[in-house]
Image (cartoon, rainbow, N blue to C red; front, side, top):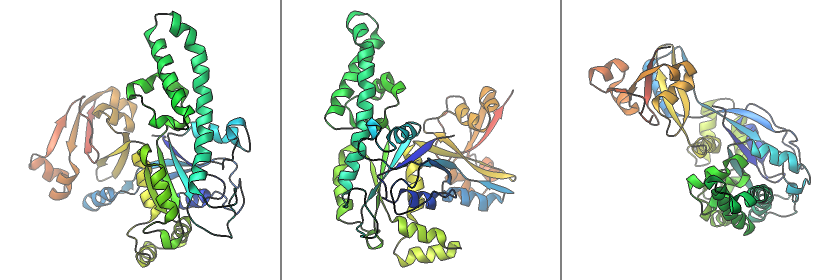
Length: 366
């Protein structure tokens, strides 16, 4: 599933350094603005201990984890919504993503230039928020102009509802708030879904801190948490510099020792990837055989035929049934055969909603 998270932030907040740690793709990380001109796309492996455990039990020829795409997008400046700097390009690249990872600088360092001359993550957040909101306001206003006459004089209920929802969103944006917090229902959002509004996308805030703040945060992190509390958004604390040092170490053992010395149990990158996966409302099911143990990415709420279609469209078209084993049952009993013998293999039809962690085998006829 080609779903993307875009990494955004002002120039020199640590975006490209973080991207380099996430991906084998190497964005240029330098101490000057706009070092990333074109969006860099990295395919990121999603860490999942369940896949490792299944591989230990099944001992397959091949193990295939889940992946998501991360896009490093050029830094933004004030006036982007009017084409300043790389504005139009930045906003276009954001529009193509499914969720936003917003990196905020939360560390002091005189050797790293800040585009606005001082460290203030709330100001930085508001600069980007404002530019995205202005772009959304323009899109919503144009839609209102387009449907206003028909909404007031015609009988088309959908047009009237579109006009109503657009006005609610417009008023919300004009107060300096993003669409994701607008007082409209999920059903109402369908009436503006074709606008692909930038501030409707789910967001994860990443506070890039110095080494001493990576465990408990600092005053800047506290300010960010307070500022985003109404957005229902997650806040992660990561030190891009530490992650770069971890990425440079040769072995897994060296990385673990490095983390332990810092009082950490896992890298910030691992936390970020899992948070991005969650942000995209994704889930995982597994197939487990001697040739391959594999994690498959689905959207939360997929039915069994839809999940089968992720493997191949023919699986969905010719779906007959799904044989399902719960992950905990497989691990506790040790094999598919043992699960069958214990009556732990369920047979499910077309309406079954796949649960995160299900181990599945599909029967189909083309």
